[in-house]
Length: 373
Image 1 (cartoon, rainbow, N blue to C red):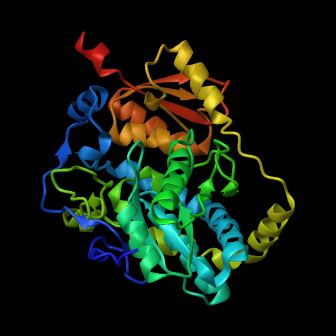
Image 2 (cartoon, rainbow, N blue to C red):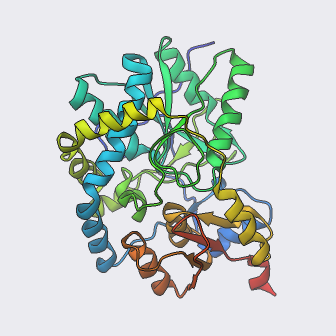
């Protein structure tokens, strides 16, 4: 395998020793479009990765809720990070290479790297790369990592699971990569929360709010979603992304990392014990959330399961980036959905009580065809 000519991008507000972005910098390219225009293109056969949503900048009340939630649940988040980090280190040791899936995986990968450095005094390499549903993983980025770390054992990291589309995409991508290049990859996805039962490596299966899901780039190093558009991305390029320098004043990315990191010493023993216990358990996957999704699809006569986004993190994304139709809510009194109720009210989206749901909530995307009738 030839050594890749690409290099990590000087992009984002994170420290270089926390993460290296294997992305092509498209900061000077206008890629943003309105939610309704993007939705029309996506639902007419275009792909969501070809453009970017306009970054939603929330009102003060919403940002205040982010901080309140972060401080209330910082130890819970830290424990989930610790449980995942301990499992990774027990499994792969000093050969582990953290590969977070941009963008939701990036802060999680940084936290796992920080935990292992504090706990074991080992600084694992950490890269952030792109994976795109129906388009696969950035093979140029994987080749770069493999050439830099020929003895490394890659560990893919994301924030949470919804119905499992990215887990499925990752498994397919790893098989394709091995067939092309003869290099086997571990397709186990490490996440903080796995409410969809999509992986065996997780901190919890509770559908709870990971506070970084509340915001967009301002809690993800000011890096956009990843882009795969043939106009700007050549065959040998990394997938692309933008650096939103204009949002530096609103950036809380490093503060979020520091708040969670400060809790690690309080949860070390519990995290190690929980991780050790998991080694003794037979952990099943089963993608149990898909039963909910199929049922919802039938009840609401939804054309594609791609328009159904279960779980707190995915429902938040629907409200921040897409054209939401309805929010199904198992328990509106849960502290983990306060921000969702606030966003739904702001955007005039109906919230429907739906107690028969494995997840706390589910976001439904509006059919543009129905809007145009």
